[in-house]
Image 1 (tube, rainbow, N blue to C red):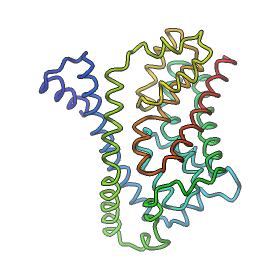
Image 2 (image 1 turned 135 degrees about the vertical axis):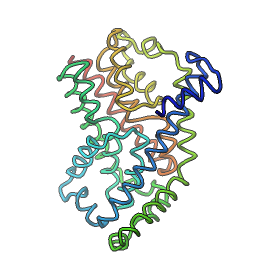
Image 3 (image 1 turned 90 degrees about the horizontal axis):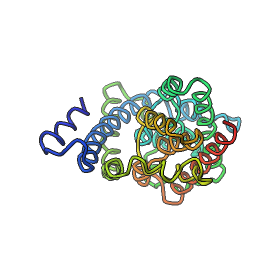
Image 4 (image 1 turned 60 degrees about the horizontal axis):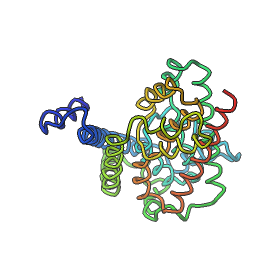
Amino acid sequence: MLQQFADYVIFTLLGLMPGSHLGAALDFFIYDTIKIFLLLMVIIFCVAVIRSWFSAERTRHILSHNREYVGNVLAALLGVVTPFCSCSAVPLFIGFVESGIPLGVTFSFLVSSPMVNEVALIMLWGLFGWKIALLYIGTGLVVAIVSGIVIGRLKMERYVQDYVWQMQVGEGEITELTFPEKLTYARDYTRDLLKKIWPYVVIGVGIGGFIHGYAPQDFLLRYAGPHNPFAVPLAVLIGVPLYSNAAGIIPIVHALMEKGLPIGTTLAFMMAVTALSLPEAVILSNVLKRRLLITFFSVVAVAIVLVGYLFNAVL
């Protein structure tokens, strides 16, 4: 219905041609803006309601395991069953930080949720077979876990925006509310958070829409073909400005592989599009200070490049 509405506004009311660059960019912008705001409202509200039944200490206990790295593994696995796009995963990321969960653990979730999920597994299995599907899921989890561990070891908590720490919940103040009060709390929390991040969502989706409409379809094949030794990092650099979820990018990946793009280069491109996107960076810039944001993107990008080269070497 959202896609039909966007098509009606752009191609019927405005009269733009379906195949035009401007039409494709504006269609993407309207569809994704509405979709993301609906997702954000539902996700933030549900997270706030669920969190109202659990104390901050209980949440910390689940994901802040005494054994080092176990929290990263649990957070990455949680990301598998929460198939959000990179932008929609941000509210849960904020909620984890507010609950006092270690920063590295929250980043393992932020990488895993958009990149590794059952939708990606099923579609990859159907298009490429079980070996490639399991390889992608396994390496995606490794990237999420290792990236979170590295960021956690760097001790960069001071580079989270101050307002996120100020929103940390008290030990029993929410769990003691009545159910109607919990709903009121969730509504107010959703409204306050959306007020802070909505301009960044609009700007981010706008950038994604421009790239979607104007980027040449053969751009990746032209510059990251099989004979280029730097094809993998180029594919990652090309993928980062783009924005899509796993279900949206897999058909493109299939087409690229049919045209002869090596599997490692293709999957590195897919990982970059789903786990690292320019719209996500714009939204996260309201949550993370510049140094932490650059560190996060750099660590994950390097891990994805290494995975891409590994796939090209062994497959």
